[in-house]
Length: 392
Image 1 (cartoon, rainbow, N blue to C red):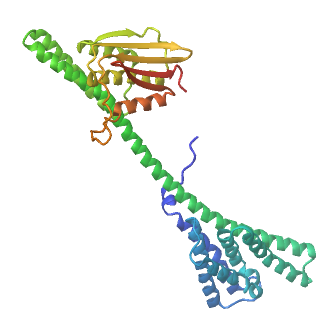
Image 2: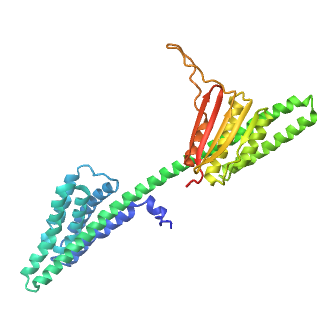
Image 3: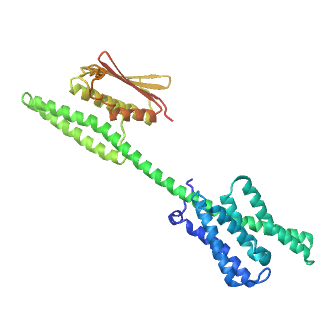
């Protein structure tokens, strides 16, 4: 089940709910103080000034915490907020308690370790203890009633402060979510470009080699056997149409390869190139899609490398099955020798780096939980790929 995703406006503008939460909580103080809800009524102007100052200080702390930071000069702004939240409390009573929530939330967001523990305990107990003491001096309240109301005050303080801290943390998580989405989108675009580049290289490498081979063959036959030359040209156009269709399929990630089709195509192409080809592919069980795809692409890449980078006259393609593993081996002669190392102090061109085709082959083998290896010995080039019969 896909988890719910926050609406885009929430992800792009997550600060507005956090700001609105601060305004709603801070507005309680001037309203309650002006009305004298609990304790003497105060000057509305003074309450408004205190509201604006506490809102500014708390928002400064919360917005910095939403970015994973602490604002410059935070010890001084935190001390100012704590003083603003606690000193007037002795005159205005619970009317002023919302600012205590701001002070506690800022402590949690800014302090660390033992200072946080001591400051938070002091802030938590300040207003509830003051209220309980005040009610015990008032004969209208019994001890259980005073303790119950003090616990209610403590619960409200924790709830409001937790809401402020959670709001800042939620904004930070939304920012991280957006950054992660951007990174994933960039990575997905990069992976798709690599896939298209790899598939086009692997596909067009053999197709273009076949077109070039058949074109040369048609030119040689043109003066001797016009009918055979025409047949080669018709075959060439067929290969070109197939390549065009495959390119369109690759761009839509709909291209699939068949192991037996690639074996037959490789044999036909090598035969047309005059390479004596021997196939030993009878011992092949039914394979999973990933294993079959890896081996099919290996045959295509091996054939392309043979035609482009060797003077092969013979080639052997072998498929063997043993203990749940399928091994493909392509061996051909006529391999070009590797360049000799340059003498000390001499300069020479850098050796040719591994081709894109072999890099794509290695990637496909790893994707199928397999391995690959190439060796050149005594003029023989060997490409071997092993994959599990069943790929998870």
